Length: 512
Image (cartoon, rainbow, N blue to C red; front, side, top):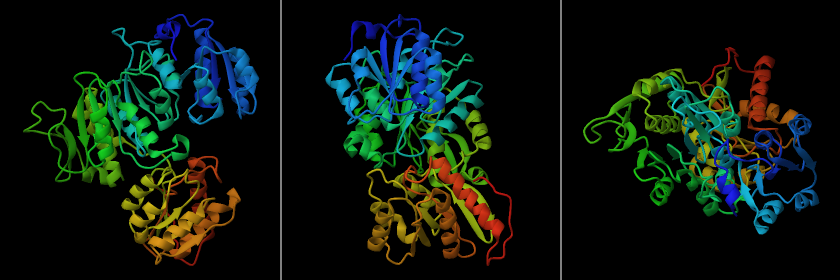
């Protein structure tokens, strides 16, 4: 629901004073929302089931109130507060009882992205206008593509802030006193669901937007694949210049075809094939742009070569696709091809993304802990066919059988970890019965990776790759996918230090 007052709140300089806002959740996003609203002069009540001590201590310091209470229903404190608007952290699904209460009561429901868009003019550029926004979503590759696009824009001399689901709340970037020319915003399907509730003054008008791919994920949050797809499609709404889509993923093309965009916006495709006019692709080992050149039908601009990418460990097929998508977004922002080339030559993959953590005793150990769903793991397995595959965790309602049927038979062996091991074992029994499967049944976090590494080393032969690509979330046994990857790397290092029956020639860890 909207109201004349809420409709008027479209600037940092609008009259936010006294607005009653309930903030649901108190992690990094929730705190950024509360801190922003207090600075604006709103009356802020934070409601959370639990909160980290640091955030809980700071809430009264900034001038807000905190209620920590079970949220099996709308708590009495929230009901009595009678909020004008509720801003929910993205962890709250549509089915959550408090979210249902908010909607039933007709209270305005926002996410942090809508609030950030409304106050985006806190710091403006030299011409007096706020920073442009570029939006990126997809089942996989979001963070890498966000970092790539920001790096390309920075290489052109512009100030770009990668933010959003990448780890830096958008509101923190909006309030940064240095100011930026472009916000490159990674959006989760959860954030997009909240954004999809709005289609008025709080709905972003991005310069360019991309959905990189679409596959089953977060079905327990959205309730169905259709709802997940519909949330992702919100990324293209109101786009001004370029709707970037994956030509190899028909669902993303359909999203663009159905999107309500700003008049004049173009559809720009990318894939690993030869690009047509208005596309980016690969021709004879050259990454080529036929979308942002003057004569699109008869010419193309060279962005990089696959050989150059291989030298930097960036030539896996899904990485090439990410680079093309990022280049399309950067080019839509006016970035020259020289800046794209410079960015690719210096770009480093983030930790836990196809990261070679060691080469020793004839084995290469690769940490792709960030492959938290089957679609991401499929890309990793395509990059390392024949690997010993460490897989498992929480599958979040997603069926692993399709991935095993498609890629499982190529694995040298499988080490199943996590609470959802049974689906892995059953899928291999049905679809790839010839592949040896080993289970790590120790639930103690401290021991899981040590045992997984031992089993993987026993299954591997000289020259093999051991690939951690869990295809699942980490929260059953680890604090995060980063914690899972760190523990894998530490277990590999401990295995190397202990020595083995192999002829160990230890080398310094290298990043892929």
